[in-house]
Amino acid sequence: MFARLSAWITARSVPDDSRGRILILAPGATLQAATDWLHELANQVGPVALGATDCGHDREVEGLVASLPALAMTPDLAASRLARLSPRAVLVLGSQDIAALGHVLMSIQAPCIWINAEGPGPEGAEWSAVFTTRAGATPTDIAQVIGDPIAGAVDLPAAPGGDDAFCERFREYHEKGHPILLAPNTGPGEEAFAFAVLFAVLRKTAAILLLAPADPERHEPVYRDAIKYSLPIIRHNRFMTSFVPRKNRVYYIEDPETLRAAYTCADITLPGGTLAASETPPDLGLPLACGSAVICGPAAHERHPDAATRLRMAAEHTGLVARGEDPEAVAAEVLARLDEGIDHEARRQRLDEWQARQAHARAAVREHLESCLRRT
Image (cartoon, rainbow, N blue to C red):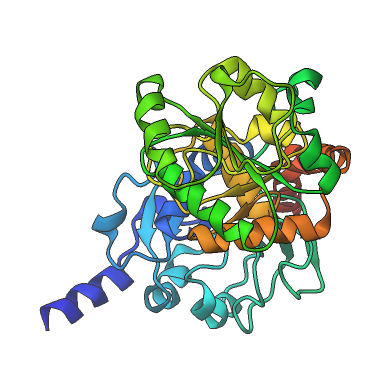
């Protein structure tokens, strides 16, 4: 009885400072990841309130995003709370936890905007705009592809100059169409993941894995452990001939200069820091800038992103990079990229187009929102 009473009180109580604002609906983790954008919206367009669609009580969302009021907004609460909030506009972020919101959104007069739309969306909801991260993400006719405004504009490093002498070592692989995989800056547990991916790929095609652990203290033990996998392995610092024979399956790298050269000739990169839980920050910028296909593993990124994590968030949301939940899934993505064909220059051109979309993604939402508010 007390639980039902608490739920009834929560549904009917709305803090005065949350009324009449632009309401942002999303799971709590999504709202936290969008912190800087939400503050940007509040400064540019007007006061913002947050509705966490996966939280059932206001105490769960206290301090969710600093200086912005936040409320519990599960679908069963939303019907009562939206009417009391009288929002100027409603922005729905993503697709998680919103399937049951359609009938609620139909009942309000404020413009509703769906951002990072995925799938068919809530049944019955009427949108003033639908923004998606990539083509084909939703069947809605009015959808516009703008990239991911949660991440916003992202910076990429300049591609390092190609080291022809180093890449020439793998000429036999290039000539035979066998892929060069790179697992850079790996941490504990990630080398085993990379080897499992390699074994799965080798069932379909010959390939070589360039492996570069991040911590110099781990170089020797990881090398000794790698020998146990019975994969023909070459240690870069002890390699004395010109070409890597096609029978080799692992090329072991232990210095940052060689790793930087390896980025320029890798066909597919499996970034360390994404393959298993690791303190190593993932580097997606360099492989993307070099035209490599990038496939991340299952390790989650931080909720409060730095620049590197912001790049990963945008790249995954928009489909620029792929992701697999286990070695078999990552290997399947590797084989899919091979079926598409590896064209480094074409990838770099698509990257330029992607970066331009990302740079304007937040402005596209802001401009539409401002236009809606002027009409209300």
